Image 1 (cartoon, helix red, strand yellow):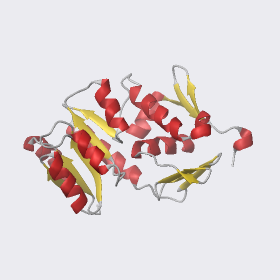
Image 2: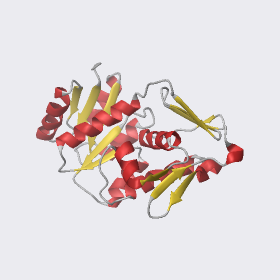
Image 3: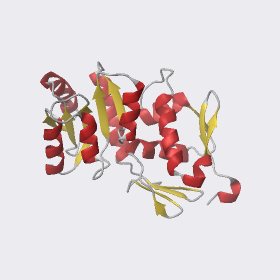
Amino acid sequence: MNEVKILVVDDESRMRKLIRDYLSKKGYIVLEAGDGEEAVDIFFQTKDIALIILDVMMPKMDGWQVCREIRPYSKVPIIMLTAKGEESDELQGFDLGVDEYVTKPFSPKVLSARVDAILRRSNAIGSDNVLKAGGLVLDKAAHEFSVDGKVVNLSFKEFELLQYFMSNQGIALSREKILNNVWNYDFYGDARTIDTHVKKLRSKLGDKKNYITTIHAYGYKFDVPKEKES
């Protein structure tokens, strides 16, 4: 592995060690911070941090504030760790550009698998790096997206979701399938995560938001009207 750096931020040293041990075994370089202020300092002083695993409740500066400090300057993927499982906390995380939301206690193996999946997709390579559909252009390699030639900023998870939709144009996708392919974990009957991201994604597509249609009690389908196909 080519020295992929991950910043783990948690005020509990045992939690940092647990995560570090699992990720180090896979060859990742793990940086650690014990509070929010230290995390921000390390992030801006260190080049090429590929992902942040961030606890919510910390001294000096909590996880939400860390997100607010970093997001204006970077789209680095963020996995938020929290002991809370309330919907308001999860929605706040999504609003701040959090890509994954993991509630403690969690399985280190599952967290590690999610890290692998995020890093794999954030460095998408291959011959079909550019997806086009009805005025939408998504460049996987450059991680850029535009609507009718105008660049639109998407969070990492919004980008992944749209990439999955555009790669499966015209196909009805169940919520289970979307979770397995975009979030890389099994479906447990809670569609809130998907629905929240679809709502935010539609808001950024402007008059093309109708490209993503809801299939009642099933999932979603991405399709472009015939007269708008490119």
